[in-house]
Length: 125
Image (tube, rainbow, N blue to C red; front, side, top):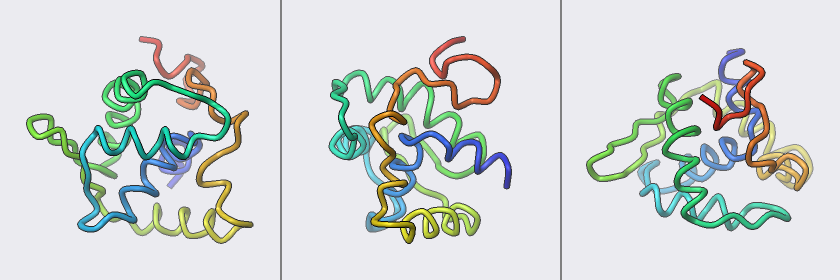
């Protein structure tokens, strides 16, 4: 559970999981996911290309590693793997106020914020 909470500390990953869990069949394309996350971002403007790169190289691998999503690189489709702990956290966040916590605040949207817990920026290798 602590791994799930650590991954969900990032506002982009919360929005990603929230979007996937609310779509029919719990799946969508990486492009659609990038649009959904960008359209929900508060106060920051990121290019679709930049968001797509962050999804492919940072967010999707972290979620896939925990078994929360499956990413088919051939079709570029992402599928949410239903998870009771994730649903519990998302439901709790959604019920707090009006759901702003799922989307994150402008201050939480720093694209290179360290949310990995390893002291490095997400994009650093």
